[in-house]
Amino acid sequence: MKKNLLLPYLIGLLVILGLTLLVYPHAAAWLSQYEQSKVTGAYSEQIATAQPDKDTQLAAAHAYNEAFNAGAILEANERKATGTGDTTAADGIWPYEKILAADSEGLMARLRIPTIDVDLPVYHGTSDEVLNRAAGHLEGTSLPVGGPSTRAVITAHRGLANARMFTDLNKVNVGDTFTIEVFGDVLTYRVRDTKVVAPEDTDTLRVEEGKDLVTLVTCTPLGINSHRILVTGERIIPTPVEDVKAANKPSDLPRFPWFAIAYGAGVLGTIGVLARMTWKERRRVKNNAASQEA
Image (cartoon, rainbow, N blue to C red; front, side, top):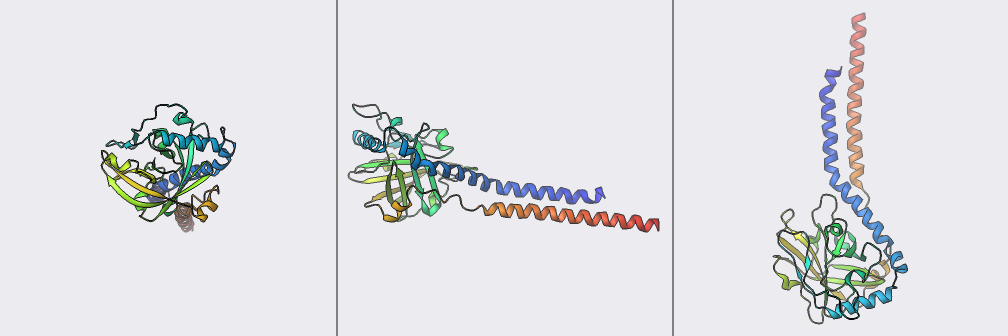
């Protein structure tokens, strides 16, 4: 009996392993999004108890933006951006890391892009530690608090096996909107242009006189990362009522994990087939033994 069932068992094991490999990226991304949603969901509570208070923090952020002109460079073959803006301390200007710090880990803001199911915490800086778990604000560019003659740059990874983040940023179109929640303020931006640029094309990240802009940045093509996708939005004033109402609410991401249902059905189906084959083989052996005794 064991020899007759060895091949089916081996095939069944390979099927289950194959299903596991297929579902892993979806499961890992789902868990990553779940962890991110816990952070964004707690953001409003953290800013309510942040010290200094939110009004002081926002005033410091606007003062920072007024004090520095900002730009950015995105090096070739790098998955993160580096800033060129002068962030040297000036009279009355707080250090970068202290401004808009909602917690000890540097949580700054919340970014939502409804068209591609993105709801990410935004942290200070673009270190590997930050970009492996969330989006990062590019130091040296304007802080994301709005205002004329500002351009904040927010970057995140694309194509990670265990998280989606900006994987679908290439699917954002002109006219789409995204929102930034920052210390109680809700800022909505309408996408005015999307570009793919070479890393040395830094002029695309310069401040534009009088404009209130945010640029979202990630790498392309997947796995090569030789160029950058830039999605730039211009502020909508006043903020749409629906975006104000949606602020501070728990994230509706991740979506229901249908992949888990499919995976469970596949595994149970495979086990069921093997169980039936085992039962039939045992019955055949038993019948053969009975006929031999007769």
